Image 1 (cartoon, rainbow, N blue to C red):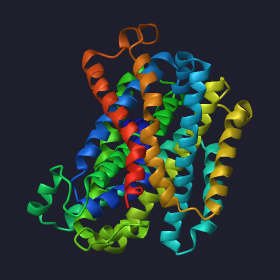
Image 2 (cartoon, one colour):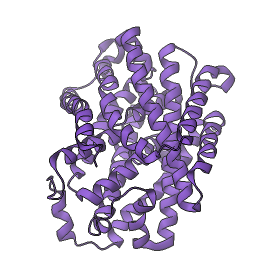
Image 3 (cartoon, rainbow, N blue to C red):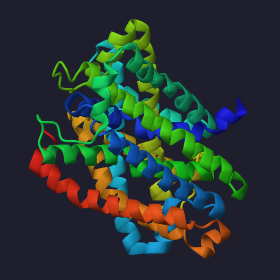
Length: 408
């Protein structure tokens, strides 16, 4: 049991990052429109985020310092501040989507308007980040999020025609879609898989848990278990949509449509597992993004931060998080659609990714910081390949969003 709980940080990071509200909706949309022809992007994202998080976690374990402490030092105050501003704003957008996602999950269960749930969701997020211990937070949400395994089970319970489903794995543009829309959703999936807040949270969580050089095995285990698990769940959500929704030409615009295949596969019991898993995953993502907002600001300005400190000892860290939650709730109360916020947040995540990926890649090769634990040749080769992919995705995201009308 202790070994399982030691992996909870990786499970929470992966489920809260890979299967947050953005991933739930984006994968279901992609599965219902493109079948499994974009699964390759999810696999690519799993490898990329695992590589990225392993570098950031190793840097945190060896140096004892988290992402934005290093970014300020390596980029300088001005460049670091620009990086901070972009990262924080995208993180705030994602936080807004996640808190809205919590409200949507409760609407799914109760039928009550999400407008009534939004303030309660924001308050719940704040209470947990203020009062709960870090280990309790990661263990509870990470393990309850495993309820999403019902999507994996549902794929088999639906008894698809494997001979028809298998060929969909070959990357191709369906006849009903055009190339620009296909590549727009490819970037959206990639952005959903490699959201920067996952790494902010993961590396800062390592500092929270007092990782050292002796923890490098734990870092690698968290990465190798958590992120592939998140990828499996993402592919399963897309597969369920491809099996049930694609043949019926059902366009996904709400969470109620995401769970249609699960209900068809396993009825009320399967629906209950899906709801528990979605609630834990989306709430966990809301916690991750809220904590990440505090982590980034506090680390950059050198303030006291962390759940291992009492709130009074890290007052500015907690104040930043409270302000972020209030802003997110106020934005949502204007009536903005959380699903729309989600779609924009995953694309902008792809745009911002180079800002944090490049400094971590540099530091993970720095002998002064890392000594004998710096990147090896294979890691650097893969990292440079992904740097090229990240830069292409970052440059292409906005033009494709404009051309396709955000995938319409």
